[in-house]
Amino acid sequence: MSGGKLPAPKTKLFDIAREVAKLDVKAPLEIGQVLIHNVCGTDVDIVASRDLAAI
Image 1 (cartoon, rainbow, N blue to C red):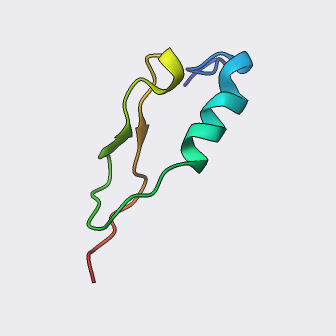
Image 2 (cartoon, rainbow, N blue to C red):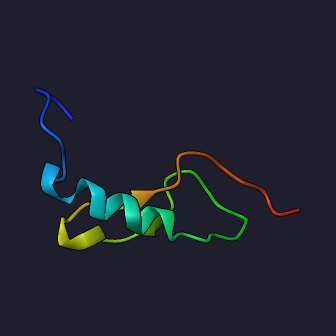
Image 3 (tube, helix red, strand yellow):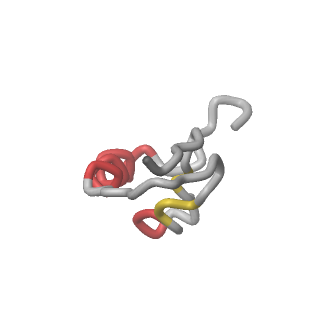
């Protein structure tokens, strides 16, 4: 992201937040793993921001 431009339109941010809130992911996760592809038709992927080992 550069120049203050968001990768997704502001009008979709609440819709995206609702989709993220629905996530129920299971370990293990790896950093960079795509959790939601093309969220809300924005061509933006939601990715894991850290590793999470299985217990």
